[in-house]
Image 1 (tube, rainbow, N blue to C red):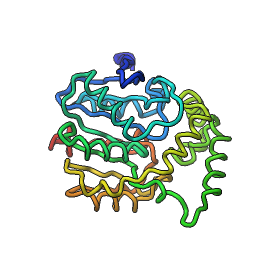
Image 2 (cartoon, rainbow, N blue to C red):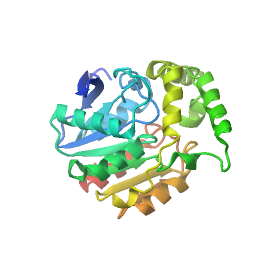
Image 3 (tube, one colour):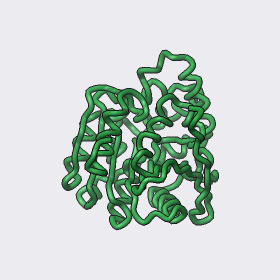
Image 4 (cartoon, helix red, strand yellow):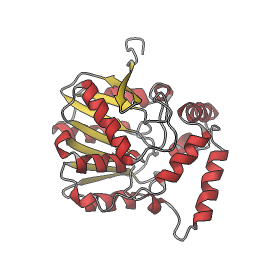
Length: 279
């Protein structure tokens, strides 16, 4: 991609915390991507398909990615950020780039925050796109899992942090590719420390925005892949059914990461939902 220069990382001040973000494209529509469990907006460009996916969206929009407070290139913090603080971070970015309204594109754990933002500030959200998401984190766990068993599960994930073990669920199709696993391992280490991960896992385990779903009044598109190893499609269809007028699309195959597999079908559906046209 010698003809393409990666976007520059900028910072928006949210309270006293600096939030790192990047902007790609200059279209008339703004799309803010709300990340999942972890992020590193610069290193993510190393993943095959990631930059191409953003460029696909930037053909018709100004696309913004950011690192949540405490992660990636954003300021480190003590404790874990609440969903309300994450909302303020998005508002800070919008103000910094002069965006009055935006499309929120939530990914995985980024979906609950996107839902809360759209319900709280409908005047600032034109469309809501929810990919591989859920409304209540408890629905991702086996029924009857005890608090002690949950803590043990988190401890095991923290113990393996930085070795690319997440590849088995984020991009299962690449789990046997040693180079891809090594790349993800580095991404993990750069995005978050093990201690910070433990804190965010405990916080995320309490996420529940189910009561908010019926209050969402912005056009909403819910996307899920049937072979997603993280979020069962039943959670996506159930979430869509509780959001007034939401459209639901289910793809027959693909990984949890939106930048892998058949991205054209997915991103084409996103473009058509937002603009009414398919490029």
